[in-house]
Image (tube, rainbow, N blue to C red):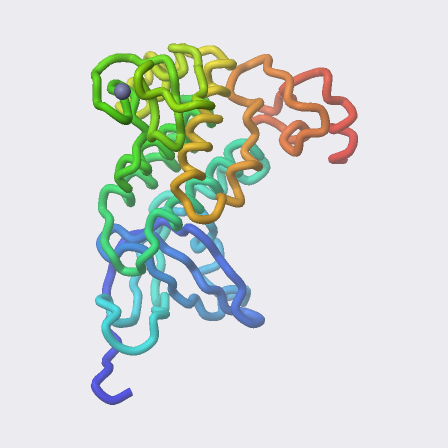
Length: 291
Ligand SMILES: [Zn+2]
């Protein structure tokens, strides 16, 4: 350990992932405000006397004291959690709420994939991630809208937002009707490649509204438009990621509007909604299955 000194430092972070390490320890993947994404060991987390356990659950916003080299130049890449305080433990509010839990999982997985290099600070992605989890927990907007807004803005931070108000190929301004993921978004009639999709104009408008945070427009959209938007956002994201997101296909897309009937036997169909109402009467079979 010559020349290597572990320093103590503080930061706040979102817990992206928790993995077992032996019997009682955990490896926590964190997106920190000032030090980018990093992994840290939390020791003794399963002991009943541990003060860490409840605070280091996925999706929580926490204040931490960490031990390690904050620049990561020397020694082990793993830091140790020495103190943790909860700022907002969003994860607790998503338990038992399948649509929000799966959306939070997709947000956390995306945050990890958008930070391929550890300890590379990304303040805007951190703020975007905390904001999305807060919006999910408040429930003021449909879950899928919050998720798609996060994915669109995350892609914008990564430099591959879909073109929406100008042709992705030639840059001609305008609301173009065709959309091509390989071409990079909306395309004009001259540049439209074979196989381009033709989404409803309202779908492109929704993608623009989510990108700019125009919730008045976004909240007023119809279910069909939201579904088409989610499909294009997911396709655009997967095109740019080397491996597909594991959590995205699990997101319950049937919950974005009241009165929507979830797909029969869909994993989300059996979960109780936050206010205790089961979303549709037609899913008695899947409700029974959960009991
Ligand atoms: Zn063009």
